[in-house]
Image 1 (cartoon, one colour):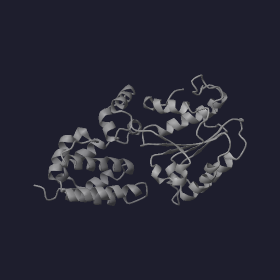
Image 2 (cartoon, helix red, strand yellow; image 1 turned 90 degrees about the vertical axis):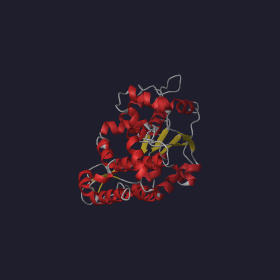
Image 3 (tube, one colour; image 1 turned 180 degrees about the vertical axis):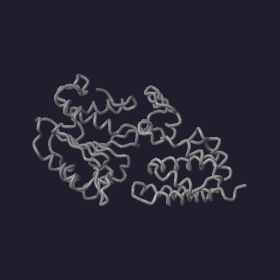
Length: 330
């Protein structure tokens, strides 16, 4: 078993070099879509493997590895966001890791290990721990039991309690070199790899997820519409787009605004290079103040993007403001 992705090879070797005395609390941080979670899970399996290879990698064939692959290893626990049912009977993903989950993990690490070896707790996303859960976990991080490893994975480590960060060994995972990411995407037969990688901000696993889910199927249509603000009908478009995944809409629209601001300042489109010509023309006629105001509003909406809102009215407001960015242009 090697690093889960080729661009993680250096970090993986750094971890293997510490396998004899691994960090009791490891915080893996970096942008979304670069494989932090896969790296943490591979490391967890390696720590639990009972017949490791000479390199230190997990063997993948021992009983412990089989259990891990099946998600049933008795000395491994995962704290993550759980699905819950609201009062309308709808199942949604929770927005935070709650204190009961943290307390269960604390109780778990205080028990004897099933295999008389190491015990591993993965917390992902660690920045989703609410205050009570973080404080409950902090107590055991201060004095972790023997042969216990905590693996925390975070896109936004600044949201973690400073006391938790201070008790962890930090491992940063950055974006892979563009050519390496493109080559990997092409090797995995991802179409429009260059355009999608640009839109993802350089995170190849975001591209894979978008391809598998089809979430970006409407991207081209959306951007073509936004390229022609004069003929844009906010009411009709809001009706047509209200069923779009809110996160995907937020990503597409925000990066479109970022590219427009960049081209207005005589820079290049970073996220949508395939629409560079249209962005340059729009940038020439956009009111910078209105554009900045819209971008600020859109950024603030990102905080509530997963909450149930009247999507159609929200989109109508956004599209009306978008048209006003160009309302005085010739």
